[in-house]
Length: 356
Image: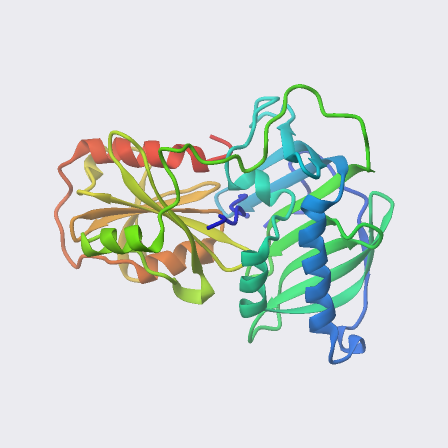
């Protein structure tokens, strides 16, 4: 089961943290002028973009930013794709990321709009698609494709698709309040370049360690019978993308859900939280449910219920809420007694934080 890596990880207040992302401009057309086939044409363009990300040879630099009401983060990436060898990335030095660091997390893949087959199915199921205008990114003419959640008139995302190569050159994700939560754009791009990236390189979305393979449906059903709650779907169209065990000292079931644009990670561990020892986690009520929250980018939410600890990680607030609503909660419970689970949660979350 291929994991859709789109956590990058929320709005962007007028400017990038590091600098202007690109010389992109658009001249939106009235979507109504596209006619009844606009949705099909827009989805077709996104499908071609999904193929171009891995099928087109290119090298370039991207700015990637995420922000939320409690924080923002940005990375600068050198990206290179060589068909047959894979997609590679190198992080440049910023105040938040050490130069040369591979972002072994959803953050890196989101920078190049990881539009795989699963993502496309979810996009088609959860969003309406239309071609809304023309634009330009790094001097290259583009077609702007907009996604709107079914039943909504507000944009959820925009993609600037290169007319010549079909590469997605810029992407913006917008929340329900109209705030930009995730954005990525090329600031320079070479097509078909034969000049290899420097030796500081690594494969994007690297293979998982063999000791933590993806769980098949049979093994996942066994864990469910043992008391692990692992829904096939969350609220708001989020579907289960991947399941695997992670961690050594305190194993956790790691579930990844997505709706085509956002991804949320859910960790399930046996035990209860030592809430008294959780410095930096604030008690909150979310939709009437008591949880502990660590604000920032990405947001982390944790609680214990029915003998298990649930921890959610996502840069998308609605994705977090979708998971909170679907997972178990106790009406009343005393503070947990297993301090080691607090450390286990931290260990399980360490790899999904691209900036910490």
